[in-house]
Image: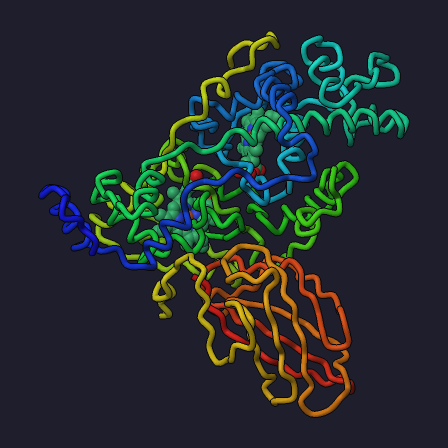
Length: 418
Length: 138
């Protein structure tokens, strides 16, 4: 032990207390591995991923309801800055009621696969999905590009980043509602379709540039880990209950088999057998179905619209192995800010964190759809006091929100608050 | 019942190796024999680094034939987690870089816990020889 002789009595007592509850080295290593949150990994498939002008444009688009067919749903409708960029609903409600829960997008740039089933491998391609999804914004890429081209602030910002916008004003050549799968789209020339899609993709790349700034803020957990890293562990930052909770989380409760790394997610997929919200609905295909959708998408990291189709990022996304265990598997969610993102699980099946922990404790109601389902979970049989400690710990993962300027439409674009 | 939470699920740069001899500098230069003793598989991670869960890495494998001169016909690598009944989430790209050497790209052992790596060497007559090695990632 290394106390200095000048240490005050109080400090000595505190240090003795800490050493009395000396942290087992594996728990300490687990803590250090989960904090701090680094900068998001580079994304070479988007050459404007870190371009400030693209970030501004992306932020404007994120808050702009005019990208939807009804002109009243924006990304921020469901990814509400006041709710940790989630919506507080069991399943999303856009133009229609969806089937899955809206995830927080704080830290989303750290994910390897986007969407709960991993059907996108970059943030820019992810952003294009909701715009043309009839449950969400119901838009069409041709209309969206026309809207941007005819809106001076957006058109100026777009040309500043990407050079030029196609002239899509001729509605005979670029019909309203034209997007893949519609007769209007089929009627367009291949060249016109490519021009529209190129600009549409660039809108996605701008939105990604903005989303990359939405980092999870520093939490009490991070401040506690920093004290450990500085050899001055201060349990008062977390509180004794949360420290016990973390010891369970990283130890006997086995949570860190999946919730590990700075996002408290392995970024991969598991089927926990959470009972479906609507037993009559077709079961979630999860990763198995998501990967086939990804491979069929023209917006893949190794596809024609990528800025680095040969990069290791693209190669790895193309080289995923899909096994029978991936059917129904859902990507492990981040636990950062989880206290603010109720209800929980892929369809909001659990209203509170305590219900989630009860599930892990008993596995009551677990639905095992096939013999390959996740073999890791066993009932934990923890006491109520231990469950309370676990929950107290999980609640310390809430961080400061992103800077105020990132939580509102940017100035100068004429977009009103959601 | 098999209690899977007996394995401390921890994340650090520790690699515990059962039944093998280190053959070089660095933490991850290893070698293992095929079950029949015919081939010795030498492998290491490049750039040299400890094995960490969920990080992509590259492996260089060289195969020594201890019972003759013929180079192997084929080589395959795989890794699985027997306790979890699943394998890797990635397809490893294996490139033959010489008569007896391979480069494996995009290997990723995505969870902490016990992984069994298998090295399958097909000899000049088409017979397969297997070496395996258990690594525990924290």
